[in-house]
Image (tube, rainbow, N blue to C red; front, top):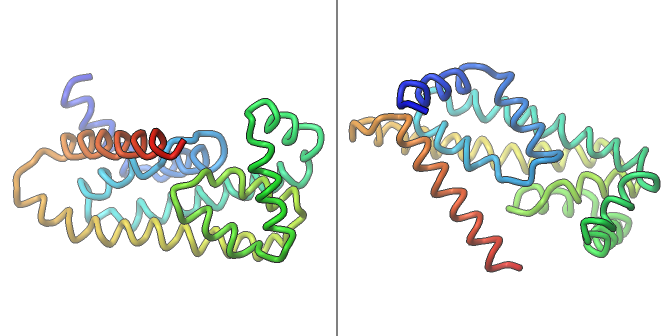
Length: 192
């Protein structure tokens, strides 16, 4: 991909809420990669649009979390539990359900969706446990809001400083994404 193609792709992604929304829904449902690997460099490269980027990914995470909540609620026995057995995640899921059923719905969902942990287990678990949807959605909205809008505010202050260095935006985005993916990979490697 040429530098012009990379720059055009990034410009389209930043300007179109549909792409941001789709990436966020995918990250909060089926794609286990951290969305920050893409959005932080985009926010830093486009600091004036950082809050807009944060808003659309926040909306996407609420939609994705709702989808998995409903999957957990309606398809626990026929789909969710067999898939978790195949993936070897059943024990972790059962622990999550126990935490959720003991009255820790808000704080469990909040912590899991704020920290760099797989949010999918919390969203499926909240649905499977029949947790209060309003409490669940409030926990997701607050935790992801703090995470994404906090990143946007930091990116706005850092992005303006990087603009004075005359570094091409597309290079900032791809190098930043590479560093974040590498960091995430190292984190996963050392937490196994």
